[in-house]
Image: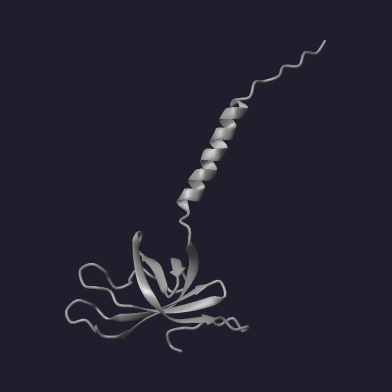
Length: 133
């Protein structure tokens, strides 16, 4: 006659549950609350430095997050901040918005806090605000 051989599972149920809980907890910790991915819509240098010796100029940065566009002025400090050379218009950008402040990332780990100059809902035609408006 035929014999049926039942294989033992590689991992028992309690171990599997613990591994699942740890995987979910690790994922939750890796995603910082309040940080979202937006889209860099515009980046322009529009003036020389207002801070003598300490800066390389002022940049207007337009970021779209869902259906709202944000304009911020970014003035990097000489020696600690750098002009936003790593930012490419059209690329995704990590941002955190809290009140009238917006944090964005330049490079791999440099977060910069700036005051929101303008916050505007994107109209039905789908064209977000840019630094030219």
